[in-house]
Picture 1 (cartoon, rainbow, N blue to C red):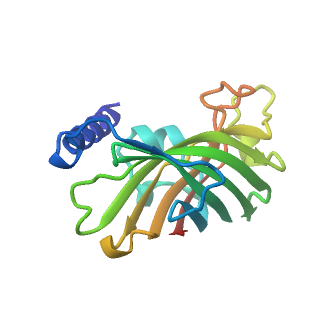
Picture 2: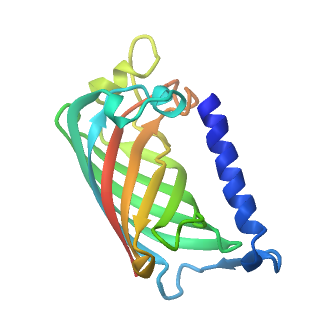
Picture 3: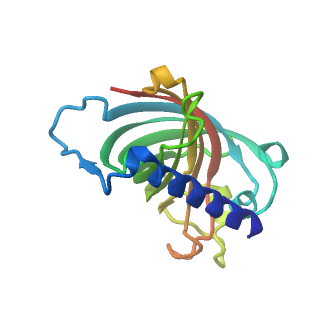
Length: 216
C-alpha cells in the first residue's frame, strides 16, 4: 500500500504542476470529438504481442517487485485494437475509446474481445525530451473459453470461471517529441473479476506486452 500511496502522490503532483503552469492558467479547457467527424490525429491503430504472467496481479500492483521477479507460464498473446480520442481536458488528460481483439497461445489458447475507455495523462515534465503518457482503462473483456489457469484463480468452489470479466490494462507509452503520433507501448494486458465482483472470479489472465501505436 505504501507503493500505491507514493504512485498516487506522484500523479497528483504531476497534475497539480501542469494545472498551475502558465500554459493552463487561463482556466478550464476541454475539447470533445464526435464519432462522425474526421480523425485529424484522433484515431489510432495499435498492435502488440506479449508473454503470460503467472504472478498474482495483486502482488504486481501492491508489492515492490518488477517484471524480472515475476513468474511466467510460457504462454503468449498477439492482438490489436482501434482507438478514438473522445475528449481532452485541460490539455493534459485524454479520454479514449478502444475496441480490441487478441489470440492466446501456449498454456492458454482462447480468443479475447474487449471494449474499454482509457483515461490518459499526457503532461509529464520531461516530454520535451521523450514524450510519455500514462493510461488507465476500464471496460469489459470477453474470452471465447475459460482456461484452466483462470479456473484455478477464480476463488470459487469448485474452481470455475466466467467468459466476461473486467478489463483493467494500465500502460505507459514513449515517443519522440517531434513524432508523438508514433508510440512504443508497454501494457499490462489484464482481465479479472474486479476482486470477485463479477461471478466471484478473483483474477484471470494477465500478459506483459509491448506494441506500437500509430495515430492518424
